[in-house]
Image (cartoon, rainbow, N blue to C red):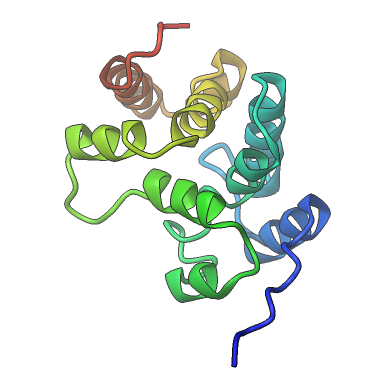
Amino acid sequence: MTETPRRPMTLAEVEATARAAHEGQTDKAGRPYAEHLRAVAEGVRARGGDDEQIAAAWLHDAVEDDALSEQWLEEASLTRRTKNIVLAVTKRAGEGPEAYAERILSTPGALLVKEADLAHNADPARLARLTDGPTRERLTEKYTHMRALLGLRQQ
């Protein structure tokens, strides 16, 4: 007996799931985390990303932040490509930036999602909201280093 394929989640369903999963979370500047997810999804769309990449953008931090489990992702009605992109951009404990960048570069579609994520994370207006200067400097250096590892031009 073969399993009947399920209808993939729509982008609206993916967005609602991501917003619910991150409900109550804030970014380092105290803003609702959903603002970051929306900005990354819009950044992917603006860069010519397809629906699978936009879905991955909405979910890009869900597993890493323990908002959704890796098991949930595996069982979700999403394409294999979307799942692979989410897993590629999910940082793993103890993983160095070089290994992380290599996984992103070797996963079709993941680089565009990470580029949009880095663009929003490194947005000067967003970083300016951080009151802690050393944190702002550390994050700026981290994002610059990752862009270099991924072969992305500096902003």
